[in-house]
Length: 255
Image 1 (cartoon, rainbow, N blue to C red):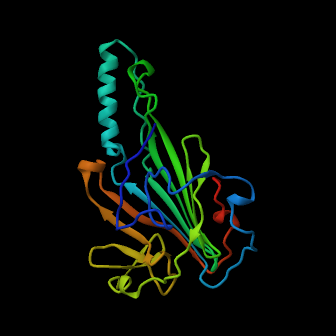
Image 2 (cartoon, rainbow, N blue to C red):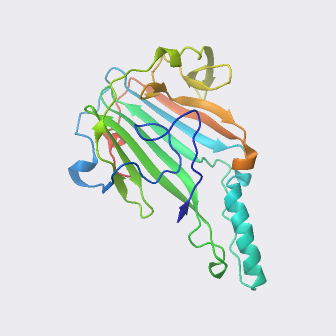
């Protein structure tokens, strides 16, 4: 089985085009393909409200990340050594390793959240297989188009499974959810507004980047080494506003 750590931060969940980590499915699923797997074709344009925000969630200490999986690997390695079996090394985490990378985009009419989550594949982690562990990834796409919301979740074989379309909420971002973000800040060139807890959103006067009624948290930090082995840092990577948005971003297929 593909193994990842499912969790929530900042009060987000996935169904209804909101944040997710390590999710297997939402609602009824069908294999993606053909005209049913993408939103209706439109000309790429820089309409009112168009933006593309890319964020990443990364551990401050990649070499300590995945603590539960590391403990399971150490147990397997001990069993293999006791049987005089060779043991494959635990995969090293790159220094720039990001647990998840998200792209939030809107062309003024459609909006999408594409989230790529990295995890560890433990399906071959047994003494007879050398306790093999490999890096894996899973894509989740949440699309809102023409008054409907639809999800696509990647399974273990790389296929995209589609949820049934549901009516999209017409409720706008609540002003009360923006009121606490008052302190200006800039990270990687992205203009932000932050609250007293140092959680930040994209400056709403530049672009209102949101999931439903909630603004996207573009930057925050959480420190729980017991669970994650390292502090986690969410940060913006890039922001484009008022420019043409690639139609491929609105596809429910893996790209």
